[in-house]
Length: 201
Image (tube, rainbow, N blue to C red; front, side, top):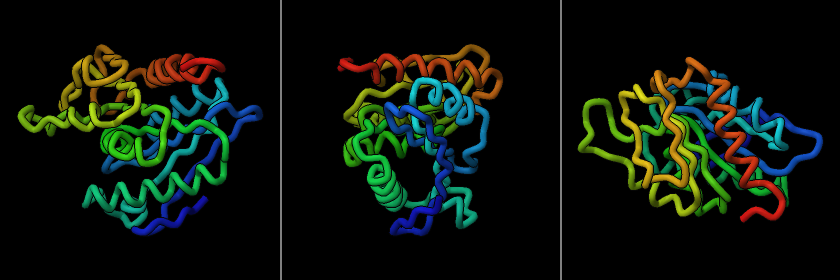
């Protein structure tokens, strides 16, 4: 599905379920796509608990760029495409997330798109070797509960437990979270299952 945004088209890969309970919109990192192991594992695991999963290829990747450029433009495009998806699935609670740069976008825009929660995979706490340039403020400013799943060996750093509603650090994993992607999916599904249970706050 192609979605028009103010900064070019985005492409959404949608996996529907028979009895949907929530909408989960996920996106990629700066140089990646939506078929990476951790995103696919999250898709599989959350479909099993009633999640309509949408994996979005952002406009900058459609253009062939390997870096998102302006954060303001990236966020504006994201807000527009999520708005279109919400219109397609009215009434479903929204959770959004992504890996690496995509996790940053999800945090920055969570309040604007009225997300219930954010799933942040491999959140890049700082550029490699530059712990003085922390991005923890983006996690804390999300305004909604954030699940962070990072590898213990991630050169982009690991956020602190106080920076998220839940922090899961996977031993032996790097930034790509590809050693045991099924475990990533399990962690996300367990957290969302508890949040999306009828009557849960």
